[in-house]
Amino acid sequence: MRILLTRTRIGTEPPSYAYRVYVPFTEISLERQALISMHSDYGMGADLLAGLPDVIAPMSHLESAPGLDKYNLGKLIDGVADRVGALLLAGVFPEMAERGVPFRLTVPSAPPNARLFRTTHNLSGRYEPISRAPESFTAEGLGFRGEADR
Image (tube, rainbow, N blue to C red):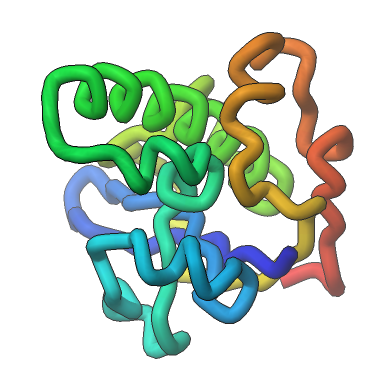
């Protein structure tokens, strides 16, 4: 599965960045695509992209009606997706050493913006196995493979 990892400067002094992980719609099933409410390229110019929580979520969660149960499970899925995203981002952006993907991260070295495609095992619907032992997962265990250095 191809993934897009991004680092975008969002603040000047001190330099701060947004780190994000996206999955191109072409990497996920048509059924999953139809259940994802946000159809956007998130300003990346890379066709339609899905956020990691929508990719790892079980289909039953995406299909369920709005309500408190869906909200509560969604928070858990977001937490696992943040942990997975942090592992993958740290594999290409060494300064991103956080346990989860932060909304904003101050990076004094002020690196340039970057958009990198990498590959992993198929993460579609993988919330359940990852959530059982999130600490045992590594980027390598998720099949994370880099390409040439940025």
